[in-house]
Image (cartoon, rainbow over all chains, first blue to last red; front, top):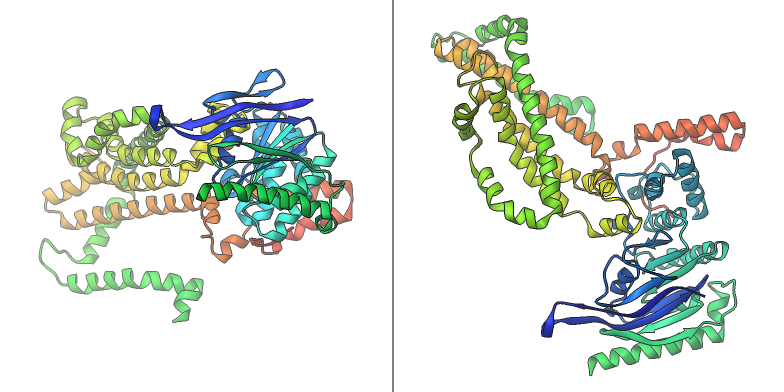
Amino acid sequence: MAVLELDSIAKSYGDGPDAVAAIHDVSVAAQEGELLCIVGPSGCGKTTLLRCVAGLLAPTSGQVRMGDEVVTRTPRSMALVFQDYSRSLLPWLDLRHNVTLPLQSRGVGRKERDRMADAALESVGLDGHGHKYPWQLSGGMQQRTAIARALAYEPEILLMDEPFASVDAQTRAELEDLLLDVWSRRALTVLLVTHDIDEAVYLADRVVVLSKSPTRVKESLTVELPRPRDQIRTKELPEFAHMRAQIFASIKEESAHAVS
Amino acid sequence: MRFFTRTRTGRVVLQLALPVFLLWLWWVTSENSTSYAYPPLSDVLEQLREDWMFDQVPTDLVPSLARFSAGYAIAVVAGIAGGLVLGLMPRVQRAAQPVTEFLRAIPPPLLLPFVIVTLGIGNGAKVAVIALGSVWVILLNAVDGVRSVDPVLLDTAASFQLSRRRTIWRVVLPAASPQIAVGMRTGLAVGLIMMIISEMQGSTNGLGYQVLAAQRSFDTASMFAGIIVIGLVGLLVNLGFVLAEKRIMRWYRGARGLLDENEAARPTARRRAAERRTANAAATRDTPSRVAPVHSHLRPTRIRHQEA
């Protein structure tokens, strides 16, 4: 069953003949429990699209639906992880208070909040770091904190905007596996936007390839790779290489269009 | 030379050297002076003791500081509140800009005649002069600070359904606070100036009044003594502000990598409390492995590039 539907989303900036179309027409449906990756060439409006999905930006036309409801602001059952952890974590709060801030508005009691925060921090491997400040930690640990904050919020849908693009390759692989781990342990639908084809194939149940701007859906490919996935063994499989090549060709075609 | 830069005593000695030298210079050059404009430093110090230890403390120093505190407090509250309103509503800000810029451009001492005409010369009028003098720089910095809050932070707040009120208190204000602190610090200096100026017209007490009165009665030693007191008041008020700012804005310097080694290694009060709680909880549970955090404040806590 589709838990999240993007129905003919279009977004343009400006009015009349000067209007610049960023997103032309994007329709995607995420199934319950699915890990869906959206890849596209750089500058194809991935972040714009994700902000529309989260209700942070109103699309020019089309609508985002969760069940029967049209998304106009971020629904309670949705949590976001931004690319730039250093800008989305609050540097004046320690990790625990960063995680508990969203819970306060929900009227969760203080003891319960702390318990939830500690559990979330533990699930991302940050137990015992709760009283440190984000700026005392490495980039990878900061992004773990952002993931913990999203998990403690107990969403049904996790939206991630290039969440691992700002960390080094080693950390990136660790965070990918962390995501697969928490996703497999919770009933969570994940919508992850990335420009990294390997990452998309490695993580996803399904990869949606976007065209260059004005953006539309180019293709949607189901990833049949077995789970649990493994950084070495999965990436050795011929199916992985095949899928990766297929998406790469598709995106390269887009860039070629852009040049001609 | 390393003595002056590397050791605590050395740094103190370095900072005291010039003031001590200047006082000595003042002492020897004024020692046998008979000029009424340049009385011997010994007379000035004698006068300082006589006037300000502590006869004029309750009659002049306290009223001055009380008016200053009230005026500055009003300026801070009004400046931040106004900064939030204008910063969060760009259209209102644009409409108000010509007025705020004009009012800021007026040299604060010119407020005095205006306030005397409208409010008279009572305590309230003096408080108003101080508040009106220092509010603009606080306001304009607050507007800047609020307007330059990172949009990603606002997206974050919105995505987690933080109410507008909570977003302002927990996200916008802290994010704008470094810029607000800059305004408050400048406002502090303006406020002190306005405190003195407001006491030089239609006043019967206060630091500014005493200095002016001493000058007018050709009591130069007393005038110098008053100036020294004013200088010390300014120094201490600024010092207090800087120390408070350093503590409250620790996160800001930390986030910008400006903490020095000593500071970074020193755990904050909150952290010490957290560790005590962990330790107590562990002790009552009697699980030896969890007792470790008790001693963790002995370790340096700078873990910038460590990966879990």
